[in-house]
Image 1: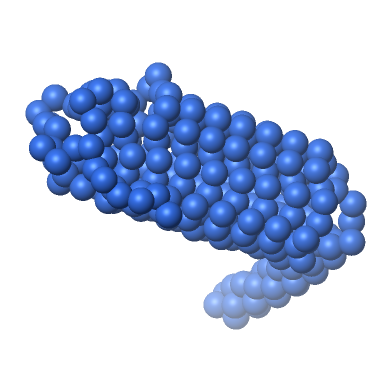
Image 2: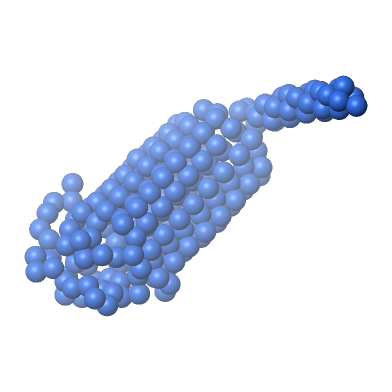
Amino acid sequence: MTLRRTRAYGASGLVLAVCTVFAWQNATAAQNCDAAATPGVNWHECDKKLLILEGQDLSGANLFGVDFTSTDLRNSNLVAANLEKATLVRASLADSTAKGARFDRIEAYRTDFSRMDAQGAVFASAEMQRSNFQDANLTNVDFTKAELGRAQFHDADISGSRFSFANLARADFRGATFTAPIDFDRAFFFLTRIEGLDLSNSVGLSQWQLNMACGDARTELPSGLTRPEDWPCQFQQE
């Protein structure tokens, strides 16, 4: 009886191993770096830098680890696309639609996300220093642990977004709008520009964060927090 069970389990393990190999082979075969930009295309870890891909439909595409350095992706459809760990340094995604897209752990230094509709997108642990989110729709976006030093959020809609543990040093939120609470739990607020913002309904803010930030008399704070005496800050936005 024991021998029969051993043989049965051995056969099952062999079948599982064979299926795993075939699944890996199929996934590898599905990757096609020469394929045209189409919905659902699999460009997994492909080299797509220095290209003009303006206005393309890449909805639902597998763009994991793709190198889009300095690539023009303006006006593109990136709805539900997976760009996890992609390189987007100095790329432009301006005016694109990226609802529900995944940008986890991307490298996006000086990248243009202006006017992008990224509702419900995820930018967790992304490197996005000096990136531009001006006029973008960032409602319910997850920026947890993102590096956003000197990022620009002028006139962006950040309703319901999460910046917990994010580095917001010198980030500029002046003119940003929101109709739902924002989570700033333990975000780094060194010289963060929050002049004129009504943060009374935000969550996670602590006095130590505000003491490092740059607000003014128009900045509204949650109950129990006070404006530091040295507001407004004087510094150069390099």
